[in-house]
Image (cartoon, rainbow, N blue to C red; front, side, top):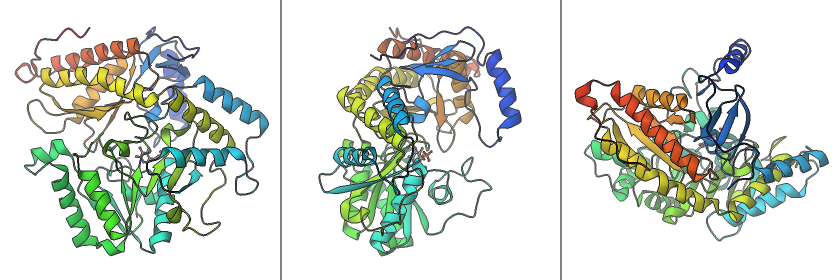
Length: 464
Ligand SMILES: *Cc1c(COP(=O)(O)O)cnc(C)c1O
């Protein structure tokens, strides 16, 4: 499926991490700020397709894509070639000083690909957080209002304004305040936990609860923007109940609020559509993108209705590096790969392969509370056996057991109890099947460590 030079085969030749990684870890501890933490301490020398190679010669199966970034595969050959060609021509001029075609071409592509067939404009930035900040600037300039509304479990970045927009204290906000004012948080539709709380978990009912808070505590007329991830990422891969997003979008339309879909994690084919808003036919006013946009090069964007995007005055938006020419060349190559190889279709196929196995885990283990996700954005929420109480320790244990088996896996969630799977969309099906067997093993191993009465897994079905 992928023309990478990296052998598409899992191989463990040392413990995880191995001795060379341990050496580098010691150097890292002496040189790198502790605030920048590491999930799986194997130091990487190469990666491609579905494999990450470390300094000890281990080859791990990639189920993280560098947090949903390398959707087209790591060091995708088309992306690498575009980067090399552009870097040899020129690496930077600053688009605001002397412009270049690549920036314009990326904006044209985003205007064409994002939901909505109205006239659009885009602006390019370096990181997802920067895109979200600029969406707020633009919405405030357009509406002449100040308030920004976000949701429980939402994640929008680590800069000052986006820390305020992000829900979770640890590790994102703790000790870093004060935060930006005029940010208000609404309850999210979280079907698994809404049901558990005895609430009506339907989308329209959850939207009514959220919009009532907005109405009573903020006042629609004060709200510049409502920002929502169509499927929440860091907060736990929470997929709102059907009808929730539509009701929220409709309220925004009726009240002159700029509806911003933060598609930074869900975008570029990840969920089986190019953008997750498309699953329910939602058409946002503005879309923020980053992560999957450029095959691993840092780039981000805000795209949306021309009249909103053009509300910010000339010189009001920008930055030294925003839309760097090398990153733009990478984005054009990545977007071409996504379209030409129908990687959104590949994401759907990945979901078809993975979801039944993950659902099987929930049937066998009483500590698997909920399995959810779309396409190649899938999650398993872990709970204390037989309850709905979040079990972060168990998620950590399964995650670690996956690492030991040569899988790059990640956890997430407000309660830290969600394992998430984000394979590159170009991963081979044999690697995916092998990864699912190893995930099943990892769950079994953790089940064995539980008190017998609680754990007893039902017999393992034949997964092949
Ligand atoms: C990762 C992420 C961000 C922040 O992007 P950075 O590039 O890390 O600044 C914002 N929103 C969502 C939904 C994300 O997943």
